[in-house]
Length: 220
View (spheres, rainbow, N blue to C red):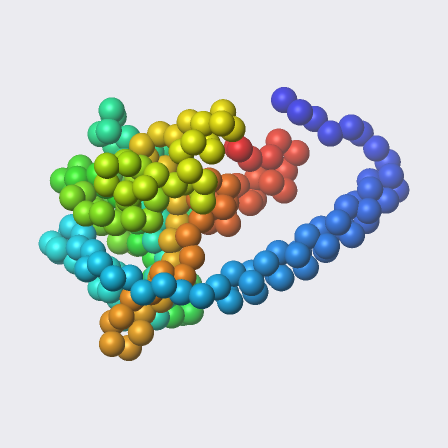
């Protein structure tokens, strides 16, 4: 277990003030990056994606629940265990309820290729208050590059090809985590505005952010 060195209060304060200057620089950089992210163009979603949930079939536009924005977490399904990914579940556990997002005209949902009859029980065991729906039989996860199968859609994860991942020594599994963001117009036209994968989904993990404040840190 890593343990910080012991210092006097004056030594600690000097080190803390030095670190604060770096933290402020990072904060300014993150704010500028967020502004660039918000300014990204958006792409019309041409397909009529249909999912299965607790009330039967539901379309992508319906997941907005009347709101302007929708954040979708791509929940990996581990077919050998016939369950959701524990790492994804841990992240979703830290998301909390959707009330705060709702105040900002934003809905949140988890989408997984897991069959609904299995996914429903998984959702219930975790007690999530946001909707979880199954995209099994749909192109949704493939089109947004969280499920990978070259026979269905070109394999590209985190904006790199399968070959690029292999050359980097990181061969790809068939299921990957990710987050996608959508915009809905008044006529229910839906647009894709953003997707992130791998470490790009860290902002969703509140527990990791808290653990990063501690000497032991969080999982990587």
